[in-house]
Image (cartoon, rainbow over all chains, first blue to last red; front, side):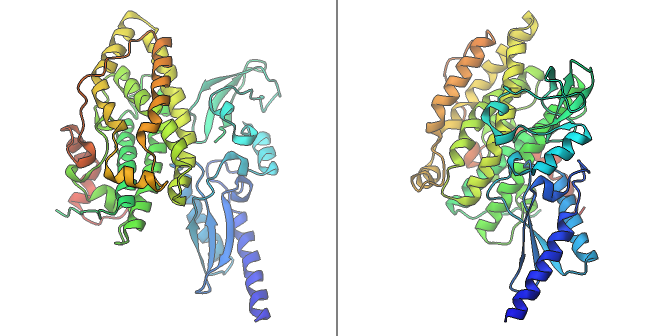
Length: 167
Length: 256
């Protein structure tokens, strides 16, 4: 019995490591663990590993790709498994890890405002330029190149940049 | 031609109504793709369409699971004819010019934002989770539509006139948003659904505030069109479905 549990723990750990290394196809510096999209790994009654992921924006087209990549990563690691989508609790940008926020900023995308606040949703937000750090920025378009991004411009260094929108 | 009839169970019907609203409006907005008045707006409308179609997918998947007949989101979207669709009439109205699209988008988003917020407190965990995400998406949609409505209403004589005409034309479809039937009342009593009347004060407040800033007049409440939720639709829905369902109708069961 305890041997079976230890075995489960081991396969869970390996499955988590494999899934956690999958990159977001739209922001390829973030792993799905950084994003908070990877929710958990369980061993189902039939012995298969079940990786739970949660969608970001309702219509994010990257979700199907992410599910496929996770299945592929399990396959490569030699772990028989499948992907399950969970909706609750709903993902918000607060699920993103600190490391994820740092990676985003290094990549040139302003990270989302913390605490998924209603103030940010209604546009009362200050976004610092990810290139020069200036707070003198303006929003150009609330809807950007992907569902999760808005387009901004820095008035100090004049560079346009993406912001990962608060959700 | 296969046409499916969906079970009468209240929660199935409720999820189906919400899904149909989202899918039909999402499809309408997707018609703007490549035709927006400027690149940013083209992208914005496509993004909003994507949010709505995503909401529809989650709601159809839930309706299918709750029904228990093994139907998935594709079957529910592609294998019902217009009479089986349960969306409100407002969302199927044609895009018209940009003013019509923005007026329709504003009237609907002003309803959706408080509606999803209320539904995120549902006792049904799946509906609550879908609503919790949709609420924030709807906040962006409302902000977008309100900003445009103000710009158009308080813009040139031409944009003002067109936007006022759009509001006047669409107003008769707003009454249906606040109707509740036995299904909704029953589910609302159990804490599963939202009584749409509870959303009305916030909708009124948003509409009055934004219209005032846009220098537009609130049309008087006259005759209100209704029937979408019992399958009595305007002629427009048939054309939407002809395009939306063509592939599955011509090649049943085709997979991507």
